[in-house]
Length: 233
Length: 233
DNA sequence: TGCGCCCTGTAACAATTCGTAAGGATTGAG
DNA sequence: CTCAATCCTTACGAATTGTTACAGGGCGCA
Image (tube, rainbow over all chains, first blue to last red; front, side, top):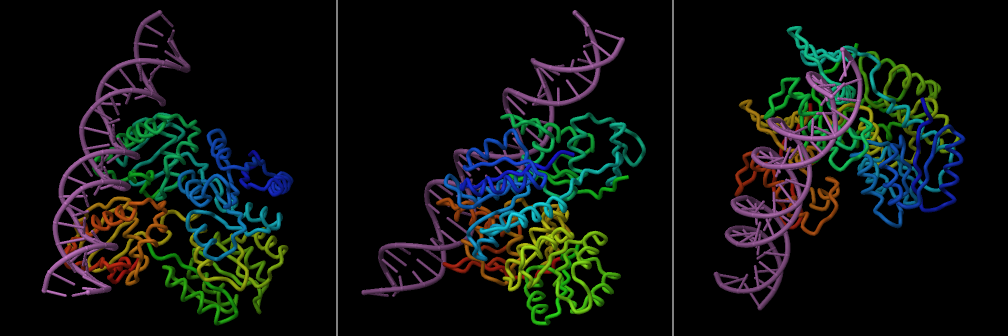
């Protein structure tokens, strides 16, 4: 297990170095940015576990950035802001932020809150290799999918990656960006089509009715959601 | 799927009723306790999704209670305390609390923070996934609307966003500006027309008479109001 | 009442997003 | 090298959503 990666996005250099020092000391890797543009560029090559974001950025609207990060990227987003009004905090949290810390802050509390977030969103990936759901049994050790009658059809590695992602987070919306990062895919301009194809093939193996899928639902413009009662063993 | 259950543990009755009222209004079920003993007894028969805990309790040490709740019960624990020292907050969070809110608090922020925690940990059942109103049943997991005869018509993501907004605040005026921000939309110069179209499409699926809508009423110059007796389940 | 202005409903169109069949690149085994 | 399996890419059709345009209705005012 490597050290969790925390990104710091704040336009004040002193705050960046302060946070970076404390977080490094506390056992995190850090990346600091003063501008949203540089930060977003870095997202192409890094997948941070936690993003600290200051709302008052010179080159973008912080709230829409938070919204994108939280909903599409699925990252843990903690706002660190000087805007202390209750309304600011509420809208920040409602837009997807996981926490809202007010400046001036105490570094120890920042560390404690980051740890609290990491603790609760612990890697949910199951250790087991067999999952049962809605009449199907997925054997990840054998790469086969067994229906309730007992006949098995093999699935490939790429299909298995998507399936495991779904089975780890059932009944939850999974955005394309989340899939992309989770499946280690570097963002290519046509990678989203590849994802579609993977899901299409998986649907075929699950014998989904294309017009009316019961297990893998498409949420147009948002992502996918896996319905199904999953039990790992 | 029921509404999320939130327990309130505080020795001040005014705070209990204040929180209970606000949380019920926000779509949660609540259970209130003034003593840790009564609270722990209730744990035998209830499994709360979120536990609000005041640290200064007369009959137990709040911190050890928090520790037990977080570790053994696996519940989401949010401390609401008058002790505002950084050290208090850090130890509270390190002992397993998911959040630490300082008295005096703003009820809206409490709701927002509870929602943030549920969003990140609970699978899609946060605000309930099924709502019944006036002969209709909305299944937000399957994205379908079921009439009283049992036939289902699907609704799309955009329609679902609007519908959920209405069902979360029935019989209350919702202004266009509120919708815009709630639906995360960046204000575009013609975004209000898009909202109209969404509502128009939703009305069609609800088989509303355009000349005399029963469920979604237009308040000229102000916004919309959703009439209907909503029960989340 | 009649007029003008603004707000709202919605049909029609355009842009975006998604599904999937078909073909080609890559990999590994023999 | 050949073959087969896998998976990405391309291309086109389908579904959805935003945008535009126009019709109709409310509201103030004379």
